[in-house]
Image (tube, rainbow, N blue to C red; front, top):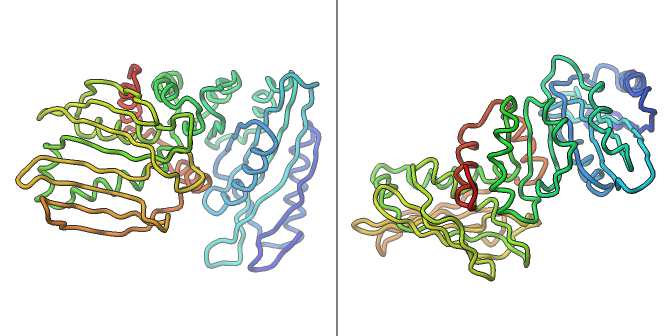
Amino acid sequence: MTDGTNTPFDGDRVSVSMGDIEVALAQMWREAGEATGPQVVHTRVLNLLICTEGEANAQALTEAIAALPARHPARTILLVAGDPEEPETLDAWIEMHCQIALGGRQQLCGEQISIHATGDAVNRLPSAALPLLLPDLPVVVYWREPLDRERALLHPLARLADRIILDSGLARDSLAVVRRLPAILDRYPGASIGDIIWARLTPWRELTAQLFDAQDLRPYLDTITAVDLTYGQDGEPLHVTQACFYLGWLVSCLNWAVETAIQVEGAGRVSVQLRSQHGRIAVRLEPGERFDELPDSLVGLVIHADGEPPARFEIVRADDRVCAISRVRLGEREILERVVTLPDLSEIASLSQELDQMVRDRTFEQAVRAAATIAGGSA
């Protein structure tokens, strides 16, 4: 353990029996108070249920969970599903994570309960988590598994949730998952639903809107004729979830229609035909270099619009991989070039952003339904 005004308290990870978790947590908080005095603040604002598979994912998630208390001190219950074919086991650990409060000596701390199951015990993970939820606090479920390998235990967890956070970018068949998302929205109408991929799309949506901020550029929104998207790709399979979300957002915001759903042309190239009140809009998706470890991310976009003169609106990631460049060209004249720093798009930053949004996000829901149509499904 460590303590000090500038060092977060670091409690040990403790193995406990399922029946002794609450007693062990109380003892853990007493020991933290004795070690640090009033520095450790025992605050919990939500229950965070995270479900994943495998020990490697569990370790990575624990590192992410450790960064949450500064903004979202929580009781986090990490459910780790092992091999259902192995002998049955159900093991639990507890630990705490602290972050120094801004400008102060106090530390905001959250607690983590990890439950690892194999064999038949995997199906009992939801019932193991239920008695550990703190009453009168919202329940957030983060399903940190590919939706195209969905296990039955998502459903009992989701029925407990006030908010469900998905990561559709983990899917191997991105188009199939995009087509399924409206059914997930409909299946859990009592919960607000978010997606890590959507959170990572936020800077692209904001930068796009800013391209048309100037009064004399807004009319070009009505004369868009083509959209070219470049997305990060590294071999097979096709990862176009974020591109579909972006197009779904454009369709829902600008009242476009989907004339022809996605056509895969090979070598990662994809085309879509959309239509506005003013005519057809040709959409092309081209694979590009991955700028980071994310297999499903936009690299650049160009929006073409007719007019006098015609216009080209562009956003592209800079070579330094941390900035984006926005440009507007009217005819042969470039009237705008702006370099902005992209925000942190890591899993923990995106998860934290989604935890800020506890109410239903109608913009997300409309974009998802439009994206499903683009992917060849039903909204």
